[in-house]
Image 1 (cartoon, rainbow, N blue to C red):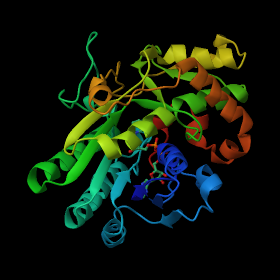
Image 2 (image 1 turned 90 degrees about the vertical axis):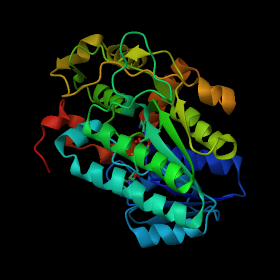
Image 3 (image 1 turned 180 degrees about the horizontal axis):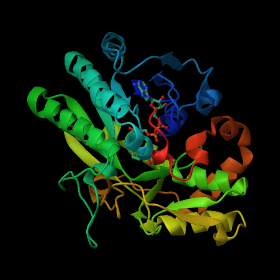
Length: 333
Ligand SMILES: NC(=O)c1ccc[n+]([C@@H]2O[C@H](COP(=O)([O-])OP(=O)(O)OC[C@H]3O[C@@H](n4cnc5c(N)ncnc54)[C@H](O)[C@@H]3O)[C@@H](O)[C@H]2O)c1
């Protein structure tokens, strides 16, 4: 199997590459990544000399480059995206360019060369879940922020290419991920790092926003299963644990680190902030046979331990977005 992974130097893409090559040592992976903020080739240092792995620094919007690479593989898995909601509130334009035009560039090569395409999307495209209900794959899409809107636009493009051109595609909509190598500005690493630096931990609004979480290795295993067992043209939700408030998850991390909950500081809420995300993933469990296997508390402990042991990975990546309690208030760059 030959795979083109786009965005493989980021948090989830690098976990996919490490995991996939471990399970399929004879497969070949090419990683196409432009190395924006959020990426690090350090995430792949353990396989950088593996003859079945190669890295190309380029943009998924480079249509001729993408065309040339897609021609020579069996599958394309696209993780490449502008991925942080707070940044999309400051400046939506790069999100429109990469998440929509980048997906278009890959889709054009997929339809020309008739290859399998795994489009990695997010549960954020559904928007707020009301009451106790959960979204399934047929629920209406209702994105609340520019990041989610650009991901939703890409989902629509993918389904239109399936309907119009009959491409071989699968869309995944996963919930919030956590684990090693997640960029410091996201909630869990930001909480760990700020707690270690004895800084206040900002919680947006009342901290009662509800999210469900998944350990990154469960997510990438789901994608691996879909490559061989997913049905073309289908969307699959992916999630793992019970829903939990942002306040509770921050408190759990402070408990692991032996820090007081008094370190929490409530700050003005993020504009357009969704109150609750909730998805149902019975489709992938029943049709594909994938099920999450990592226990939440153990995976969270492992994640905290990883940040404790890998200060040299995150220290150089700290910027004003990690240090600022409300990064969307930073001036537009
Ligand atoms: N992090 C989550 O909780 C989560 C949940 C569900 C879905 N997702 C989706 O999973 C994917 C990966 O998310 P992540 O958290 O690993 O993000 P990330 O920001 O860590 O990684 C994204 C990668 O894409 C690369 N990239 C960005 N623009 C590019 C371009 N124009 N050309 C080539 N490469 C480019 C970056 O350099 C980076 O390595 C995204 O599509 C995201 O929407 C993330």
